[in-house]
Amino acid sequence: MLTGVQVLLIGGDARQLEVIRRLSELNASLTVSGFDGLRTLPGDISNSELREELFDKADAVILPAVGTDDAGLIPAAFSDSELLLTDGMFSRIPKYGTVYAGMARPYLKELCQKHGIALVELFERDDVAILNSIPTAEGAVKMAIEHTDITLHGSACMVLGLGRTGLTLVRTLLALGAQVYAGVHRPEHYARAAEMGAKPFYTRDLQDYAANIDLLFNTIPTMIVTAQMIAGMPSRAVIIDLASKPGGTDFRFAEKRGLKAILAPGLPGIVAPVTAGRIIADCVTQLILDDISTRGNEQ
Ligand code: NAP
Image (cartoon, rainbow, N blue to C red):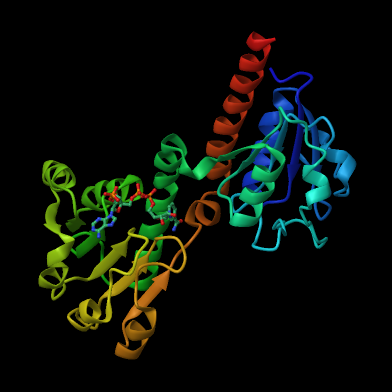
């Protein structure tokens, strides 16, 4: 249980409602801000206006998936108020407090560093990234179905990058009966792709595999689907780029060539906010519990 643990949760989308639900089930002393557009909140919590005093005594400050923007604004799907995270707020977080966010931009990292506050970027953790790969793969399949007029079964799919997202996507596409070409750069990933029944190739040879692809899914967050690659692809092909913004595709050239190319960020929060919220809730509550118990043992 989290009885007596002070948690401040600010902004976010439907995923954070699952986090609120879990924290109130665990009896945390929970304050939330950025939900004034909702009539009711899980656990009958009421919304508070964002102000510096809320940060006093906070054991944990929970921010949304993207943390803040480059100017410190916290996105909030359920509020029209401007939620700005300021230096003054950070100066009031106790030194034992921890800030949790899906990911952190330099603004948030610098504030944490300046005030000596621990920062956890949840999406960098393998457990969260692997579990998030499930709604991501399902979202990618949904997009593929919506943007093609063929079945995935029997189609020629290419997945670039066999990391946490790529691996799950390859497995999902194979289960749907697609032929899957997996672009890798490590021999162990080549071996894994072969073991799974995919057709592995090294991305240095990417262009050799371009000609017969129906769907290309990219998970590599650097420019990899270049103009040269796109020029070799059939015009029926659809590119779904899952890598973080700006993706790894030359979108301008794809458009010029008349090829459908879509940057698809944030799929877990779009296609399965409840599941994605539970993934965050499970991880963040466990981390708070671990933190409190470590602190208790040190006292
Ligand atoms: P990851 O585990 O690091 O996977 C990326 C993989 O690409 C790694 O195995 C990496 O190998 C490999 N790679 C890098 N350069 C390569 C190259 N030139 N040729 C072949 N393979 C290469 O990351 P992830 O968690 O799967 O996430 C991948 C991307 O998707 C990230 O940008 C992430 O932010 C994004 N993402 C998007 C969504 C969404 O909804 N769209 C959801 C989750 C994640 P090395 O390990 O050797 O570098």
